[in-house]
Image 1 (cartoon, rainbow, N blue to C red):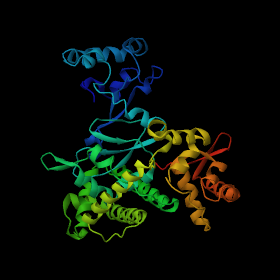
Image 2: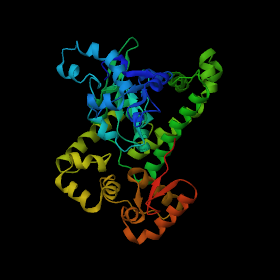
Image 3: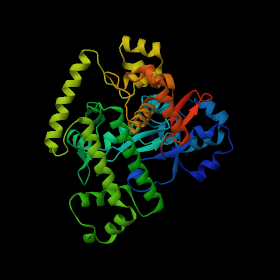
Image 4: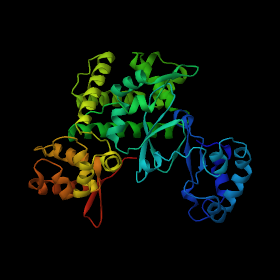
Length: 408
């Protein structure tokens, strides 16, 4: 939360302030996105984010930035009755300290606009600073993106959240929409299917928006809702028809339909149930998970991040004992280890899913995340070699560890 318009600058202004000339300034002037940037078109602005620096460090290292904020931010902040905000005038009014460690080390993260006509989730690059009106979720896993983008979650979110604005748009309230939502416990093959579809949706939207400057995310989903309401393309006119054609919205609908089917399958529910039945089942599953947690079983989404902060002493000891990455890959299933499949295609999907959930991992860590353990070491190695040759996996530590290559 900025508390001062002087923090936002154009790229040209950023260059004038020393970006590209002052060493390390690229860490503190970064791309910035708010809700309109995502639902309409990006403004192309950047933001000065000096979190972690005191005023003297800013003045010595980045004097142009210091003077800019001294002139454009400090006069208004001096008038603020909140002493902390007026004293730390070179920093955002609210620095959101709790989300920063959750995003540390990620290559991307999930966002949704807090108040919007359509409940859309998407990835932002980790270099982007999100506005306070975006709900930022500290996960780079496309499985999480896929579940959140599904009919199951959007039905829950619209009912659990609030409503606001001229159009009575739904509001995504984190404490009511995200925190109590029970994610499915899916095997590796089903998780992989959801990941692929979520990445396909994210890439499709990004591609058509890049290729056609007149398109917006809201416009794409306006037309998608028309298709879902059984409006035929030939009945569309003007802007809607142009959006349908240039945005390839029929493909977007097909991808979302496949994603919904995959997420319903992950829950083990039929797609034919009503929204009311979806909500009833989610409430029942939430109660079941709450009972499990009283017995010490927590189904962590990011065990490597969450266990050190919120886990039990036993979970923390296990994480330290067998290593963060391996513990993450095992704990992510929050239950018995999955069997390594017999079918070669399923084996590939299982290895890719394990890497997406925890990577980078070495071959032993991967093998021991399955029920058969070291007995499937050679098969896991063969899958990894094939994935490396085809470019789906990259290696680190001189070929000792493997990581899934992230989609754009």
